[in-house]
Length: 276
Image 1 (tube, helix red, strand yellow):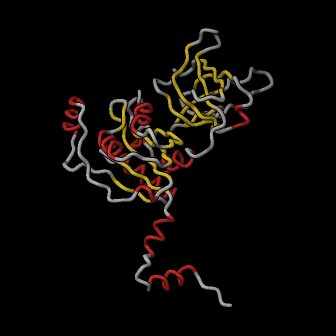
Image 2: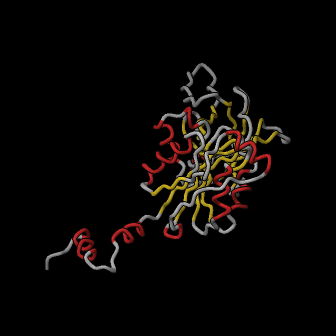
Protein backbone atom coordinates (compact mmCIF):
# COMPACT_ATOMS: atom_id res chain seq x y z
CA UNK A 1 0.00 0.00 0.00
CA UNK A 2 1.39 3.40 -0.96
CA UNK A 3 2.03 5.68 2.03
CA UNK A 4 0.69 9.25 2.08
CA UNK A 5 2.79 12.19 3.14
CA UNK A 6 1.73 14.68 5.82
CA UNK A 7 1.59 17.52 3.27
CA UNK A 8 -0.64 15.45 0.95
CA UNK A 9 -2.93 14.62 3.88
CA UNK A 10 -3.26 18.30 4.81
CA UNK A 11 -4.07 19.13 1.18
CA UNK A 12 -6.83 16.51 1.07
CA UNK A 13 -8.33 17.56 4.40
CA UNK A 14 -8.20 21.22 3.40
CA UNK A 15 -10.78 20.42 0.71
CA UNK A 16 -13.38 19.87 3.43
CA UNK A 17 -15.06 22.98 4.75
CA UNK A 18 -14.77 21.86 8.39
CA UNK A 19 -10.98 21.55 8.24
CA UNK A 20 -8.58 24.45 8.81
CA UNK A 21 -4.92 23.50 8.25
CA UNK A 22 -3.73 26.72 9.92
CA UNK A 23 -5.41 25.60 13.14
CA UNK A 24 -3.56 22.28 13.05
CA UNK A 25 -0.24 23.96 12.44
CA UNK A 26 -0.81 26.56 15.17
CA UNK A 27 -1.53 23.77 17.65
CA UNK A 28 2.02 22.55 16.98
CA UNK A 29 3.43 25.88 18.17
CA UNK A 30 4.15 25.20 21.82
CA UNK A 31 6.14 28.31 22.71
CA UNK A 32 5.31 32.01 22.46
CA UNK A 33 7.63 34.93 23.24
CA UNK A 34 5.78 38.09 24.26
CA UNK A 35 7.93 41.20 24.44
CA UNK A 36 7.79 44.90 25.13
CA UNK A 37 10.63 47.07 23.86
CA UNK A 38 11.09 50.77 24.59
CA UNK A 39 14.46 51.49 22.95
CA UNK A 40 14.83 48.40 20.76
CA UNK A 41 17.07 46.29 23.00
CA UNK A 42 14.33 43.90 24.13
CA UNK A 43 13.15 43.54 20.53
CA UNK A 44 16.66 42.57 19.46
CA UNK A 45 16.91 40.04 22.26
CA UNK A 46 13.53 38.61 21.21
CA UNK A 47 14.55 38.28 17.56
CA UNK A 48 17.71 36.37 18.49
CA UNK A 49 15.71 34.24 20.92
CA UNK A 50 13.22 33.40 18.15
CA UNK A 51 16.05 32.20 15.88
CA UNK A 52 17.24 29.86 18.63
CA UNK A 53 13.87 28.54 19.76
CA UNK A 54 11.84 28.79 16.50
CA UNK A 55 8.91 30.12 18.53
CA UNK A 56 6.08 32.54 17.76
CA UNK A 57 6.52 36.13 18.91
CA UNK A 58 4.04 38.85 19.80
CA UNK A 59 4.78 42.48 20.66
CA UNK A 60 3.09 44.54 23.36
CA UNK A 61 2.30 48.05 22.13
CA UNK A 62 0.79 51.01 23.94
CA UNK A 63 -2.36 52.53 22.48
CA UNK A 64 -0.69 55.95 22.31
CA UNK A 65 2.94 56.85 21.59
CA UNK A 66 4.93 56.33 24.78
CA UNK A 67 8.04 58.39 25.57
CA UNK A 68 10.37 58.95 28.52
CA UNK A 69 8.19 61.74 29.91
CA UNK A 70 5.13 59.46 29.90
CA UNK A 71 7.02 56.74 31.74
CA UNK A 72 8.13 59.15 34.48
CA UNK A 73 4.62 60.56 34.91
CA UNK A 74 3.00 57.12 35.04
CA UNK A 75 5.53 55.92 37.61
CA UNK A 76 4.91 59.02 39.75
CA UNK A 77 1.14 58.50 39.58
CA UNK A 78 1.48 54.71 39.83
CA UNK A 79 -0.60 54.33 36.70
CA UNK A 80 -0.28 51.77 33.93
CA UNK A 81 -0.55 52.72 30.24
CA UNK A 82 -3.35 51.16 28.14
CA UNK A 83 -2.06 48.63 25.61
CA UNK A 84 -3.37 47.22 22.35
CA UNK A 85 -4.90 43.72 22.45
CA UNK A 86 -2.64 40.92 21.23
CA UNK A 87 -5.45 39.07 19.43
CA UNK A 88 -3.89 35.71 20.17
CA UNK A 89 -5.15 32.71 22.14
CA UNK A 90 -2.60 32.23 24.93
CA UNK A 91 -4.11 28.85 25.84
CA UNK A 92 -2.72 27.43 22.60
CA UNK A 93 0.78 27.63 24.03
CA UNK A 94 2.35 25.38 26.60
CA UNK A 95 5.11 27.87 27.42
CA UNK A 96 5.19 31.67 27.32
CA UNK A 97 8.44 33.64 27.47
CA UNK A 98 8.17 37.24 28.67
CA UNK A 99 10.93 39.60 27.51
CA UNK A 100 10.98 43.17 28.80
CA UNK A 101 13.19 45.99 30.13
CA UNK A 102 13.54 46.66 33.85
CA UNK A 103 12.45 50.12 34.98
CA UNK A 104 13.11 51.25 38.53
CA UNK A 105 13.59 47.75 39.96
CA UNK A 106 10.39 46.43 38.38
CA UNK A 107 9.08 45.23 34.98
CA UNK A 108 8.38 47.92 32.37
CA UNK A 109 4.92 49.41 32.86
CA UNK A 110 3.43 48.20 29.52
CA UNK A 111 4.43 44.63 30.45
CA UNK A 112 2.72 45.12 33.81
CA UNK A 113 -0.39 46.29 31.94
CA UNK A 114 -0.36 43.03 29.99
CA UNK A 115 0.15 40.86 33.08
CA UNK A 116 -2.70 42.58 34.93
CA UNK A 117 -5.05 41.91 32.01
CA UNK A 118 -4.08 38.24 31.57
CA UNK A 119 -4.01 35.61 34.29
CA UNK A 120 -1.45 33.22 32.83
CA UNK A 121 -1.69 29.56 33.81
CA UNK A 122 1.06 28.51 31.41
CA UNK A 123 4.66 27.61 32.03
CA UNK A 124 6.45 30.97 32.02
CA UNK A 125 10.06 32.00 31.51
CA UNK A 126 11.29 35.52 32.26
CA UNK A 127 14.03 37.31 30.32
CA UNK A 128 14.64 40.82 31.65
CA UNK A 129 16.80 43.37 29.84
CA UNK A 130 18.56 46.49 31.05
CA UNK A 131 21.41 48.10 32.98
CA UNK A 132 19.44 48.96 36.12
CA UNK A 133 19.54 46.96 39.32
CA UNK A 134 16.86 44.32 39.64
CA UNK A 135 15.80 45.19 43.18
CA UNK A 136 12.42 43.58 43.93
CA UNK A 137 11.73 42.71 40.30
CA UNK A 138 11.49 38.97 40.93
CA UNK A 139 8.98 39.45 43.75
CA UNK A 140 6.90 41.77 41.58
CA UNK A 141 6.81 39.18 38.78
CA UNK A 142 5.59 36.49 41.18
CA UNK A 143 2.84 38.82 42.40
CA UNK A 144 1.78 39.58 38.82
CA UNK A 145 1.79 35.86 37.90
CA UNK A 146 0.24 34.08 40.90
CA UNK A 147 -1.05 31.10 38.84
CA UNK A 148 1.83 30.65 36.40
CA UNK A 149 4.61 28.12 36.76
CA UNK A 150 7.73 30.26 36.48
CA UNK A 151 10.58 27.98 35.43
CA UNK A 152 13.51 30.33 34.88
CA UNK A 153 14.72 33.91 35.24
CA UNK A 154 17.45 35.32 33.01
CA UNK A 155 18.76 38.88 33.04
CA UNK A 156 20.55 40.38 30.03
CA UNK A 157 22.55 43.45 31.15
CA UNK A 158 23.75 46.07 28.66
CA UNK A 159 22.30 44.32 25.62
CA UNK A 160 23.29 47.26 23.43
CA UNK A 161 26.97 46.56 24.20
CA UNK A 162 26.75 42.89 23.18
CA UNK A 163 27.19 41.50 19.70
CA UNK A 164 24.56 39.23 18.19
CA UNK A 165 26.89 36.29 18.76
CA UNK A 166 27.37 37.16 22.44
CA UNK A 167 23.62 37.50 22.91
CA UNK A 168 23.04 34.20 21.15
CA UNK A 169 25.57 32.47 23.40
CA UNK A 170 23.99 33.95 26.52
CA UNK A 171 20.47 32.92 25.49
CA UNK A 172 21.53 29.44 24.45
CA UNK A 173 23.35 28.80 27.74
CA UNK A 174 20.44 30.03 29.82
CA UNK A 175 18.68 26.67 29.33
CA UNK A 176 21.44 24.61 30.97
CA UNK A 177 19.98 22.77 33.97
CA UNK A 178 21.15 24.11 37.36
CA UNK A 179 22.84 21.68 39.73
CA UNK A 180 23.34 23.89 42.77
CA UNK A 181 23.07 27.52 43.78
CA UNK A 182 26.16 29.56 44.58
CA UNK A 183 26.80 31.70 47.64
CA UNK A 184 29.65 34.17 47.26
CA UNK A 185 31.37 35.89 50.16
CA UNK A 186 34.43 38.08 50.68
CA UNK A 187 37.29 36.32 52.43
CA UNK A 188 37.37 33.36 54.78
CA UNK A 189 36.38 35.04 58.04
CA UNK A 190 33.46 33.50 59.92
CA UNK A 191 31.70 36.88 59.75
CA UNK A 192 32.50 37.43 56.10
CA UNK A 193 30.41 39.78 53.98
CA UNK A 194 27.97 38.09 51.63
CA UNK A 195 27.99 39.23 48.01
CA UNK A 196 24.47 39.68 46.72
CA UNK A 197 24.22 37.36 43.74
CA UNK A 198 22.39 34.34 42.49
CA UNK A 199 24.36 31.86 40.43
CA UNK A 200 23.13 28.48 39.18
CA UNK A 201 26.00 26.05 38.67
CA UNK A 202 26.10 24.45 35.26
CA UNK A 203 29.26 22.48 36.02
CA UNK A 204 28.28 19.65 38.35
CA UNK A 205 31.88 18.44 38.78
CA UNK A 206 32.99 21.87 39.99
CA UNK A 207 30.05 22.01 42.40
CA UNK A 208 31.29 18.83 44.08
CA UNK A 209 34.58 20.52 45.00
CA UNK A 210 33.16 23.48 46.93
CA UNK A 211 33.88 25.62 48.84
CA UNK A 212 36.70 27.26 46.86
CA UNK A 213 38.50 30.55 47.33
CA UNK A 214 39.80 32.60 44.40
CA UNK A 215 41.01 36.04 43.44
CA UNK A 216 38.44 38.16 41.64
CA UNK A 217 39.55 38.97 38.09
CA UNK A 218 38.11 41.68 35.88
CA UNK A 219 37.82 39.39 32.84
CA UNK A 220 37.88 35.59 32.43
CA UNK A 221 41.49 34.42 32.56
CA UNK A 222 42.93 30.95 32.11
CA UNK A 223 45.17 30.04 35.02
CA UNK A 224 48.76 29.85 33.72
CA UNK A 225 50.74 26.67 34.28
CA UNK A 226 53.19 27.38 37.15
CA UNK A 227 56.89 26.73 36.89
CA UNK A 228 58.42 24.26 39.33
CA UNK A 229 60.48 27.04 40.90
CA UNK A 230 57.59 29.45 41.50
CA UNK A 231 54.39 29.47 43.49
CA UNK A 232 51.22 28.46 41.61
CA UNK A 233 49.22 31.31 40.16
CA UNK A 234 46.09 32.09 42.25
CA UNK A 235 42.75 30.76 41.04
CA UNK A 236 40.77 33.37 39.12
CA UNK A 237 37.03 33.97 39.54
CA UNK A 238 35.28 36.33 37.13
CA UNK A 239 31.84 37.21 35.78
CA UNK A 240 30.94 38.31 32.27
CA UNK A 241 27.67 38.32 30.27
CA UNK A 242 25.79 36.55 33.08
CA UNK A 243 28.34 33.71 33.15
CA UNK A 244 30.59 32.92 36.13
CA UNK A 245 34.08 31.73 35.18
CA UNK A 246 36.68 29.87 37.26
CA UNK A 247 40.16 30.00 35.68
CA UNK A 248 38.57 30.92 32.36
CA UNK A 249 36.10 28.02 32.35
CA UNK A 250 32.33 28.66 32.64
CA UNK A 251 30.92 27.09 35.81
CA UNK A 252 27.54 28.78 36.28
CA UNK A 253 25.04 31.40 35.21
CA UNK A 254 23.11 34.06 37.07
CA UNK A 255 23.04 37.69 38.11
CA UNK A 256 24.69 40.04 40.61
CA UNK A 257 22.28 42.38 42.40
CA UNK A 258 24.89 44.96 43.39
CA UNK A 259 28.38 45.96 42.37
CA UNK A 260 30.84 43.26 41.37
CA UNK A 261 33.74 42.54 43.75
CA UNK A 262 36.79 44.74 43.23
CA UNK A 263 39.59 43.34 41.12
CA UNK A 264 42.17 41.47 43.17
CA UNK A 265 39.88 40.86 46.16
CA UNK A 266 39.57 37.41 47.70
CA UNK A 267 36.21 35.72 47.14
CA UNK A 268 34.91 32.44 48.52
CA UNK A 269 32.35 30.48 46.53
CA UNK A 270 30.24 27.81 48.22
CA UNK A 271 27.05 26.01 47.25
CA UNK A 272 23.63 25.02 48.50
CA UNK A 273 20.96 22.68 47.16
CA UNK A 274 18.38 25.33 48.09
CA UNK A 275 17.75 28.51 46.13
CA UNK A 276 19.63 31.52 47.50
